[in-house]
Image (cartoon, rainbow, N blue to C red; front, top):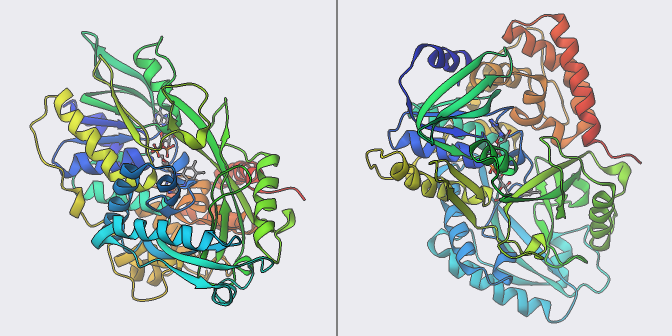
Length: 519
Ligand SMILES: Cc1cc2nc3c(=O)[nH]c(=O)nc-3n(C[C@H](O)[C@H](O)[C@H](O)COP(=O)(O)OP(=O)(O)OC[C@H]3O[C@@H](n4cnc5c(N)ncnc54)[C@H](O)[C@@H]3O)c2cc1C
C-alpha cells in the first residue's frame, strides 16, 4: 500500500474506474476487496485514516450475537455465524477462538442459557468454534478468579471469535491491492459528479496537499458509516436521515481484572443490554453502552455517565472492582444503525441487519450491519453495483480469499506480533539503529513504526499509535511516553522535519485527552 502511487494513478489516468468506494472502514474495505477480486477496476477513498471511524472502536468480537438470538433474530445470527467461520478460516492470524463464561446467579439461568447456547452451536454447524456446556460454581470460580462469588450458582461456557479490528482493515487493504485494487487514506469525497442526473464519479480533496481531483466512475458506493447521510445529501440535498447513530464506549483495564484466558459475558445489565469483559493483548476490554446521540464526529467522546455505568456494572460481577483510576484507556465508537421504519424503538431494538439503498441517481449506500458481516455486506453491495453500473457479471470469490499475511498461528495468539502473519519474521528481524523496544509493557518495537510507514500507508503519529499498533487503545498514558520516539522514527521514513514532529506531538497530546478518564 503506497499512497504516492495511488496519487500518481489519479493524476495520470483519465480512464473511469468501474467502482469507487467512499469510506475506509469495514464496509468499504470489504467492498473494495470484493470488487477488486471480481476483476473490476476499483478505488477506495478514505477521508482520514483507514479505521478512524467506528471500525477500530468495536468490542473486537467476531460473533454470531448471542443476544440477537434472544431477541429472536434468527436470520441475523445464522448469517453472522457463517461469516464468523469464514473470518476465522481466511484470517487465522487476526481472529482467534475466545471462550466466554456467563456467570449464573439465579437457579434458572444455568439451564436457560445452556439450552440457548446449544442452539447457537447447532446453528454454527460445521463452522462451530467449540461446544457450550454448563460448569459448576467451583469450576466457574477457578476459571474466573476475580468473579463475584456471592450468590454464584455456576456458569455456562461458550465460544465466539475475537480479533484486532484496525489490523484486519489494513490486511484487507493489502489483499485488495494484491487483486489490483487501489485504496488511499486522507482523500476526502467533497461532492459527487453528476451526468444526466446520474452519479458519474466523485469530487475529492487530498487532505495532505489540498489538491483537488475529479474522479469518474461507473458506480459509486457510499460506505461511510455514520456519515452516510452526508453523502446521500450530496446526492439529493432534501434526502431524509437514514442513520440513527448510537454511541458505545469501552474501558480498558489491566489483566488482573480477569486473571485468566476466559472472557465474561453478562447477558442482562440493568439497562437490558449485554456487557463483556474480554481479554485483549494482555489487557481487558470492558463494554459497552448504547446511547443515542444527535451530533456525531470522527472522534466521539465517552460520556461521564457511560464511564460510571460500565464501572458500576463491572463492579457488580468482580471481586476486585475497577475504579476510574484503573482505566488505562477509554474509547467510544458510533454504531451506524439503519434508522427504524417506526419511531420509538430504543437503539438496542434496532436491527443490526444491513440495508443497501440504491438512489434514483445510481448512488449505492450500504448502511448498518456489523464488523462480523462485512464480507456479506460487500457481496450484496457488489451485486447491486453490477446491475447499476451495467458491469460484466462476475461471481463473488471472497468466501475463499485468504487475507494478507494468512498464517495459522502455532503459539499463543495474544502475542501482538502475530497479526503480521507470514510477515512477522520480516518485521521482527528489521534492525533499527540504536533502538531496541519502544514499550516493554505493550511490546511495541521500532520496526513496527517503520513497517507501518513503508507498507501500511501510515501518515501520522496517530495512525501508528492508534491503529497500526494499538498503543492508544491499550494504554493511553504509555502511548504518550513512546510518542516522541515513534514520531521521530516516522518522520525519518516520511522525510519530515523537526517542526512536523512537534506538530504531530501537539496533535497527539490533544487527542489523548479523549482516551483518559479523570479520577
Ligand atoms: C461500540 C461498538 C462496538 C461494536 N462491536 C462490534 C463487535 O464486537 N463485533 C462486530 O461484529 N461489530 C461490532 N460493532 C459494529 C461495527 O464496528 C460496525 O458495524 C462497523 O465498524 C461499521 O463499519 P463502517 O465501515 O460501516 O463504518 P466506519 O468504520 O465508521 O467507516 C466509515 C468511514 O467513512 C469515512 N468517510 C466518511 N465520510 C467520508 C468522505 N466524505 N470521504 C471519504 N471518507 C469518508 C470515515 O472517515 C470512516 O472511516 C460495534 C460497533 C460499536 C459502535
